[in-house]
Length: 224
Image 1 (cartoon, rainbow, N blue to C red):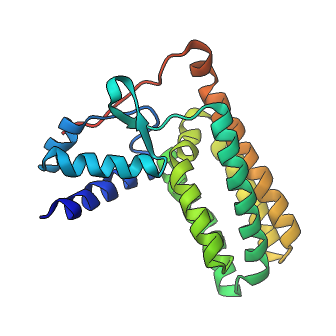
Image 2 (image 1 turned 45 degrees about the vertical axis):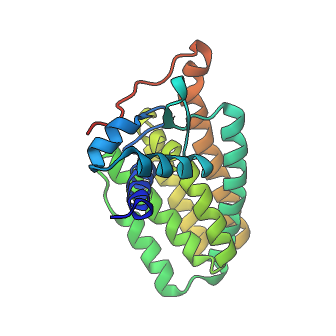
């Protein structure tokens, strides 16, 4: 396998783990451990990590080693502000453009019972993905996909760190669904904006002790 293809494989695998919440903010990404894990040299590993740094998924940590990116409250606020506005616009357009079949499929997504935080995080992604596609605007879809890739590690973490967030998120999803079914774009947008603000509030509360003490989060890292 050539180095570029190897780098693509590593990039895809690590990005998927970050998006799925299997790698969390602050987790180290040691080149040597990753090279052993993927049974490749450090060159494609380094290339993949550099690409992920350009996308905002990872950053340089102690001794210049890569870690899954941690954001300051200001960074997160700006990210979620942009995300909330685009999500709200997609919800507005989805309310106007989704077909009856698409609305029925959206209803089915929220009818799934989730027993674990990971199950609910996966359902949350499916719900937002359905609205992104239901908006029927490829430019918005691409912008939202990029912001999702940058924020999903934080959005997934909220369900693990806040006991009540899963229930409140579920209620917010159902309210958005009702606005979509009623084809009320203004209400769907307003509810989505509030929904994303709620997510940000949980994330900021999650990192507040870390900001106060300066201690990094417990890290599970990457093992071969």
